[in-house]
Length: 439
Ligand SMILES: Nc1ncnc2c1ncn2[C@@H]1O[C@H](COP(=O)(O)OP(=O)(O)OP(=O)(O)O)[C@@H](O)[C@H]1O
Ligand SMILES: [Mg+2]
Image (cartoon, rainbow, N blue to C red):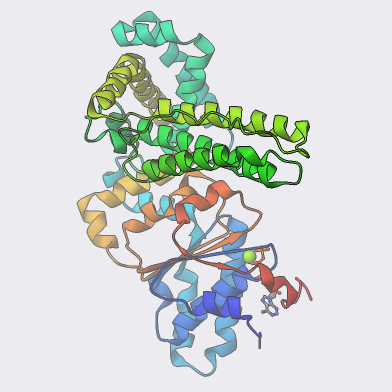
């Protein structure tokens, strides 16, 4: 009988919330997931009410096999577990793409697709995408229209192609790419500016700049207080720190520059230098303070203070709208051209599987059919892919009451972002007590 560590136990038993377990390879994520499933089965839940998603087919096979062994071990004592053992062959334990294929094939009319299509695993889809990019860009240059001309005039050819590809890849990671795309072409008002994505990006950059400035201010304080340091400048660093604090508060609050904040910096104290003051420390202080001044001024220049300044911001955004609109229109044309090429060859790529499944689940009949079939949704070893970045969107059609995620700590941080806010159990201490693989 496995002696679960306290961290494992909390991951096994935590309930009524989403859980993310992040731990090193071989430290017991799958074991914990199996035990968590077993706990639910022992309590009388049916395996038919669980959706268990893995990243690879090998992981699905491993999960099924380990679960089969775990149920078999206890089936002698329980009629319910014997029944679960019989149900296991039909249980939904698969990769996300297999699961999506199942939905699409069952609801091909709702998804609006040819059920005979096959998933591309030979790289043909990538070649079709290149073909679609070529034809779309040719079309842009042949009949650009006013917006398209603005795009061509503003950006070199190779940048246009790179932006188009990046935008398309990014769009495919959205639940509802085209609604999102259209929203980006709307200009905000002074009241909604704060929520606009461009403004949010600016705020993010301003925060980063400010945090760099605060770091330098802290170094100035240290230098001023160190033996031989210019103690007479300490007050200047303190005043700079106060200005940085006001800006930080504004960035986290209204997101606007507080009216009346005047980025004027105190003159360096002219008090007589102490006898032991060292010129290198004075120079180090001054160099840092010069950078601080530049950075704080830059933060102030990034943010509007008044409604009038917000309007100036919006006017500048309006200036960039024509090339942006052209890029958005071109990416829609690219999508149509690429979809057309794939349909002619009855081909799906992996992104199609996710989007078509979502599309099917959004229509009335499949939605009614799939409503609440799952009470638990379990994902293992999540890595970066459009699907794994947004698993909740697929699961939302079935609205599981609780999700469980196991993530190998070698997975990149990018894959963790959608699951921020989950109750996280870090099992990194597990290694000390867990028997190594095969041990
Ligand atoms: N608390 C524990 N005590 C003893 N052995 C344990 C414990 N937890 C897990 N193990 C054992 O550690 C080994 C590895 O566990 P497991 O396969 O669940 O790790 P994993 O994190 O899923 O690995 P991977 O990252 O390769 O998917 C297994 O043999 C398992 O039985
Ligand atoms: Mg595992």
